[in-house]
Image 1 (cartoon, rainbow, N blue to C red):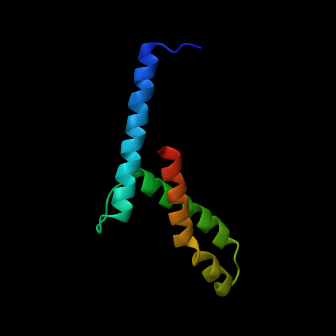
Image 2: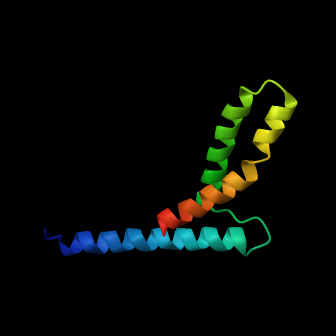
Length: 88
C-alpha cells in the first residue's frame, strides 16, 4: 500500500503535535512546581475524578469511602503515565 506524500506529511505533523503535547504535559507535571495548564493532565484528572465519584456514591459508610479515595492520587499518576506512553 502506497501512501501519498500529503498523507505522510499530515501524519508527521499530527505525530509531532502529539509528542509536543506529551512533553509539555510531562514537564508541567513532573518538573514545574506551579500550576501548568495541560489539557491532557486536566482531562485525565477529570476522568479519574468522575470514576471515583461514581465509585464513592455507592459507598454507604465513611470508612469505605475514605479507603477508596485514598487511592485516587495514585490512580491519577498511573493513568497519567500510561497516557504519556500512549501519546508519545
